[in-house]
Length: 333
Length: 151
Image (cartoon, rainbow over all chains, first blue to last red; front, side, top):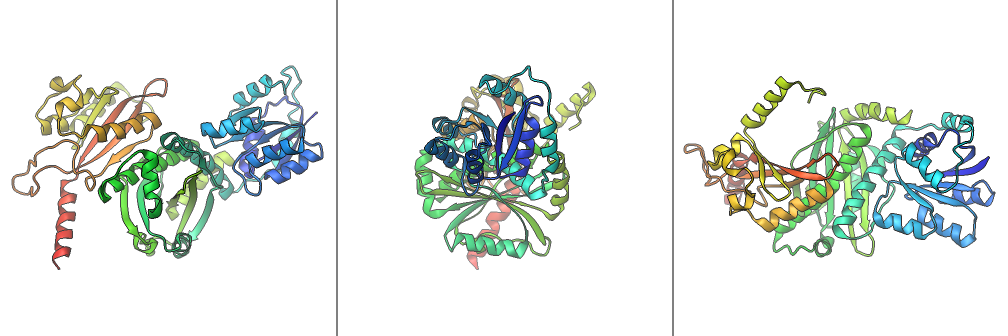
């Protein structure tokens, strides 16, 4: 038996990955929800091979790879991540990962990668019992599933952004919350700390799942953004156009990534510039009479080596939550 | 859209694209026109035969080429949609206002959506340009702003 560690902060991601393992691969599976737990498992000899996610709390994938190298732990690592930027792939290989597989892992790709690396003998007899037992144990809830779907989607958006701006995008773990609308307002006000902002929003709807995507730009960083893009906006009008274009890329890619995973096609309205150089209170007038609760996904992108951040918020209508749950159930079970 | 489309429905779809009061143009990567619906024909006065295979820039000298290319380049490279709004860019092509009684503006304000169209191998081979007449909304918004400024 080969001791295998599957390290990912998402239950759903681990479930998807374990399900994608070759059935006849004789492994004993240990699970870790962050790099620190993974390292502990490796030190106990539980990991000859590890499948490792990158975007995780406590200790992320990069730090874990660095620690493995620093401690001289003998473990063959294959990275399985939604962060599909070319630079991410280059970095993990440089840190000693043997291969990179994009999420959600395709069983065929996983099999051929393991074969290529000589980690798996195709003539072995099927023993998928271990996998089945682990899969039964793993419970996935709605928030976890949506967080993982978002994680994959934002990774794709980041890869596009990296290509356009020629930068490395740092990805956080996305936040998924169901808010009372008044709470959301407070959270936003808090997070923006009185900064001047510009906001672009765009409605989307597909299969009864609807909401608005809101992208917040910090005014203090707009000049740096223009430099990265090689634009020279002469006035507010041209700056708005630059923000609208950037918003279309990020929102479009993120929504397309989510849509593909839950098998929906979203219609998108024209984006709208909510305002420039305003406070969050001026920008957002949430309709509290019509909406009580909202499902909010928050993703903050920051550009490495530049003082530039984008905050993307996907706010779903109350009616969408049930339909979205149904869609996610297919992925969870 | 139905999952299976029979030939009669293809005719319907073509009719709809033809008659809908929205401009639809399909361009290849060289900006040459491949599809040109009635809205485009009626407002430009040029029929599909006249424009087919010609580049958009040669047909409409008022198009800001640098601006359009930048948008189309991202659509092609990234496969995402791009948008243009009348507030930032009043129109893509200059169409005279065609309503002598109710039309108060000189020209048609336009919102534009650029959609990537995939080829067989997923690469973007064509761009669909969708043009919306938003003159009424633009007029109202400008009137409202003027009224507020005068108060």
